[in-house]
Length: 140
Image (tube, rainbow, N blue to C red; front, side, top):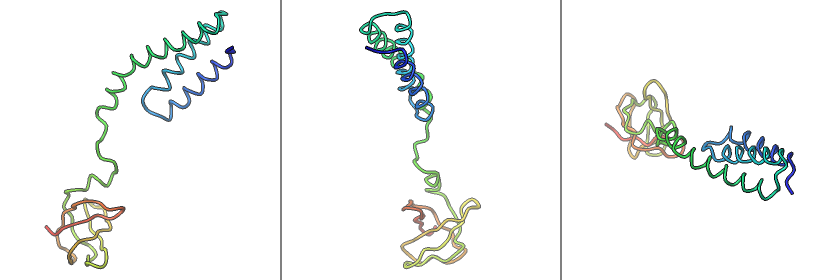
């Protein structure tokens, strides 16, 4: 039913895909398929191979959950690098009008910004939120 090559190919594909995806899910399947390949190599019947595959995969999934959770526990909650700018203070370097965006400097970086009021060059602003690639700012 299952050839040795099937289990080996499944193992290789799962390990390669695990390299580009987080979570250890595919690695668990890969380890299960390696165990099934070993069962095939010693000429166990296909049902036993499948049982070994399922059992080893489930054991690996259960064993890897605490490790995966520990690795992802400190993951940043913010989605984009620019989200770190929310609440930061900056200075207007190109005037902002109600109709047109301007430029602000925050921590040495220039960003395109919009505001609900006119803001002159040199005025201090605070980043309220982000819309697309523009900062929404308010006067300080």
